Image: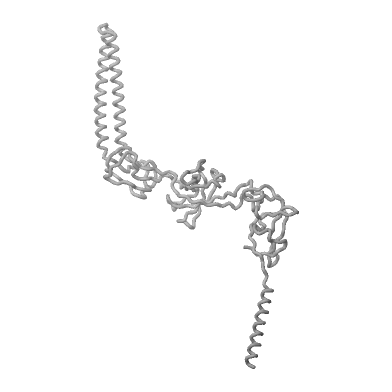
Length: 361
């Protein structure tokens, strides 16, 4: 008897569970998820950021124009210098010796010129009295002319050797800050060998590469925004100052340079920067609406889109007839039927029905 009651109880419980499950299944309502996009203008929402590196507008490699051993080197990393300040010099032994030799040659050439001049004056006097021939007079004139040329050549030689001595000194060409130091005292250097780098510019520039897909949207004097990862709470304005017409073979991008218009001492040369371009800021495109090509369907009545509308707590799609224009890189131009800011479905049009309830994703 007890066994029978247990069986009846088990059957009744199973029946209740099945009944509740069926009720739950009936109560469950499926709402189709749909992807959407707001209707915007042609060229709108084209904000792109590219990475670059900051540097001062004028970077000067400091070097000697002569060979020698560094005997004075008053250059330190981060040092501020003034234009004309002596920074370093060489021993210049050979240049000084060559300069002294050139002085000796100049004195000798001057003596020969003076002698030739006296000879010319004497020969002229004799020629005028008839005691010297014309050939003697012409010879004296030629000798004096040659002596003059030798003197002028020796004089130029002195100037050249003086320059060679001056080439053993480095003076600050501009006001600035020493950004790097690569030599030290007692080191032998060659002409043109950089011993330090001077950041002399007052403006800060960002160099970056722009891909082919958007380079035509970059224009001279275009306003951009600059952010630095090391300065997270600050944003700077800049303008495009240089746009290369040719691609860089190493990076496959077009080199572009922008100048920060509100610089700060916090920006240091070599800092990584993100430069943001607004390629959608074009007056000619502000009056042309555009929708993605995959959001446009077609039936016997023409072209249409599904507009997403909110009705109370539910969201439904409404089939909206539209008139389209040209197909652009951003999608179809809209001539009528939509307005900016409306939400439209951009996927699964073939499975949607007019008035169907959906959920946005």
